[in-house]
Amino acid sequence: MKKNVLKFASLALGLCVATALTSCHSGEEQEETTVVNNVIQLETRTLFVHTNVSATVQGVGFNFSKTGENVEITNAPASGQFKVSADGRQTKTISFNFQDGAVLYFDIELVSAGKGVPQATAEAAPAGTVNNTDGSDNAEQTGVDASIDFNGATNTNASATGDYSITVFTPDATNTSVDGIKKNDKVAEAPLAIECKPDGAVFSSPIKVSLNIPGSAGYEFNVKNGNDVVIPARDGDKLTADIPHFSVWDVLLVITCGDLTTTTKEYETVAAASDGKATLKVDYGYEADEQTKNSLIAKKLLKKMFGRENTEQVSKTVAWEKVDGTATVKASQVVKTYKFNSAQKNLEVTVYGKVTTSVSIETTTPEEVKTHGGGSN
Image (cartoon, rainbow, N blue to C red; front, top):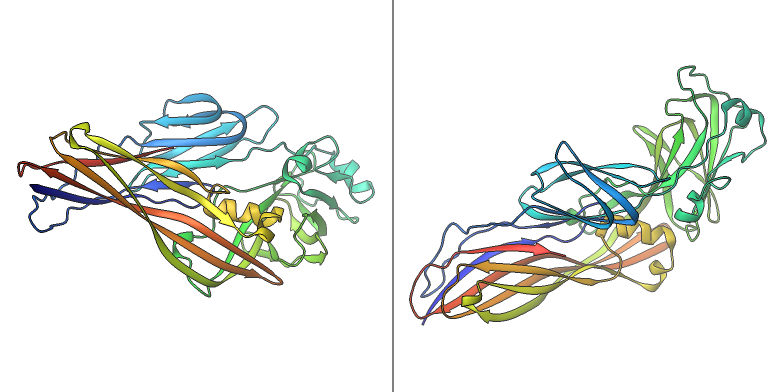
């Protein structure tokens, strides 16, 4: 019997605004093998978009439009943008880049905007008049109450017109390359942000923005816009920041990687080589400790960094040129357990990440066997 062995990387799982399922390829010599040096990859570039409500997903610069909570975009361009919108919710424009991969997964949260209040009314009114609770579902949807106390300050930028409002949301872009996190690394990531409107309003003295974030006591935060960084005052779950102007301010949760362990998980399936393909189920997502599971802010942080909360399985299909014989498909997955700390809090999370696969085909003749891999949810 002759055995043809081909190996290639197939998935990279992780990252939450966008979780990439990527692939690359190589050929590797083994004893008594026929080597195919150029592995053919015929994967179709696919975007999977999940939203918390039924939304319309539209291509920006390419022709695509579909509505639903789970939308699949096939034959997508190698890079670009798509827009996600729903009635009464913030619209988001998401950038994507397949790089060396074939599948990208996005878990998008759309929230209602805070209700606007005329500037003169808000500046003259008592504290808390401008918030995300009165006339808006934003607080209920995000779990975070937000309010603005102008404390006598007025907008000095006459070009920044329009009502005052505050909206809490989770930003999609990440500050951190999670695959590169090492022991003792300090990471500042934004599980929340506040959009204060009108953009560009500048105040005669700093105004107070307060957030009531359940379960946030004991964590380290700062609030950032560009080069402006504010260390907020803390009172239990209440966070108050004095900000000088209106824009989008990231609410950064600061964590340090105290320990990191890496293991592997193995998968295997056998199929008739004449089938031309086989599918493996591999784990995706993360599992956290009980304290973290019960913390709103910790869950938002980890979901953004590492993808879908709780482990589920996704399908990985490997294909080859049909021949007579037996195909053995193996997968090896990197599993990382992080122990983070933030001020008085600890977070432990196990992340099911990058998967590499190999195909071994036993045939009666030493013919070349060409393979390609694909991934799907």
